[in-house]
Image (cartoon, rainbow, N blue to C red; front, side, top):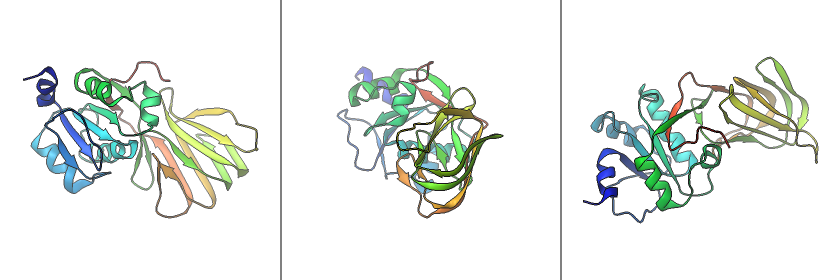
Length: 224
């Protein structure tokens, strides 16, 4: 048995959608953005086993949702082998090369990193965005927007839980605010969570720090 194969025995690798890995496995093949029907039986069959998600940030978010719903978020380390450009990898200093990312995900220790929830039952592990809109937004008690915005970006941040950047002018990037919660009331607009557009427009939206952190395998102690 190779070193990689030995590590695979101790961590459950979920290969999501069309992603392929050079290593021979064993892996569990699941759908892109796997849901309850696929993930919950695997969690029951492999209790207390760290997970490795080979996929996109959205695939990771889907797995995190199931861990959160089962009360296993704080106790189950999770690694990521990014399938494409990854905000999670950028934020927390994870390797993006498949072979190196798999090696780290199978062998490194976890670090706690914040996870954001929203009022539609989802989570945010990388970046959330809105395009051009008009409305009012608050970061905790601080007014972040009144009127039009060209874009809004939100991502997990270790300081308070979330970082928010509102761009109002064509060339004005806007300051970055840290907050525990971001609340928006606006004319109909569509949020994007970890690269996936929400299925409908909304007039109200909230992202807020979850009470428990994700135990992300291989994450840097310093945020990037």
